Image (cartoon, rainbow, N blue to C red; front, side):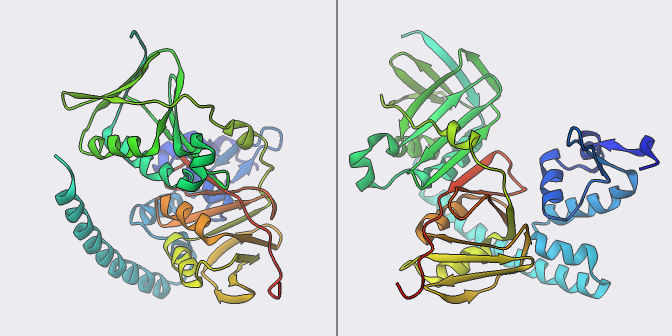
Length: 359
């Protein structure tokens, strides 16, 4: 590029347009907003002032909860197409808001009234949200009988971050939280998922909670009350080795999360679900029969991969935002499920063998 003086780093551009750098990287991956220049040596992305208008429009559409497949049509389509999509999205948003308000009101009615090694302060709602997201990855009761540790959630406390991790060997969920404060030494401990859910039901109503960890266990504090948080003396799987050794993604599929979930649910749970992606074509098949073709943005070479619907569906349910991104390295490696709206939550889902339809 000739006008190098006009280039802005991804951080500077992110502040200017009101988007997180992680969101800008996501939009680059999804062909929504490419940087004007990428340094071949460092991989750093740079943007120009001329890209601000598109970036701001992307942000406004995303703040309105619009899926990227629709947002792209608004960004690049005709005025008539954009108007029709915006009006339809507004109608769906009104229906969703009414349904959500009803569900929340029902939940609110049902809500129930040694030396410290580390102490961490967190937002109560943030902790409850993290528990909701990682708990589905805990193993079933039958698996816990053989491997009790898989019925637990790992909590890691570090200086700048608190992580909640759960796995059942076929999926892994990780949510990172930004604490208000951390005192003491970094530590990690295991809590049974049922106990953690009970804590989350209290924390969701509180703006500020704290957890103290000592050699005997942990203790939860909130709204002037305290209770023990029993810990489990087991060895949690080394999940970081899995994350660190994942191959680079060769295929990316982004689609409407709700639409994908509904398509998978409609296909049933009585057999493998196969996903085929080829350029802009994305097809779901159950037992060799195509069931639906949700709108999607697909990048990378053609790919065919199979999942157990009972494993993939909870990973979709645990996400946030209207879109889901599947990052696939190969049909036999764990698939990363993530969204642009929450870079702090990651789910890994193991694919299964793609059996021929006649077997």
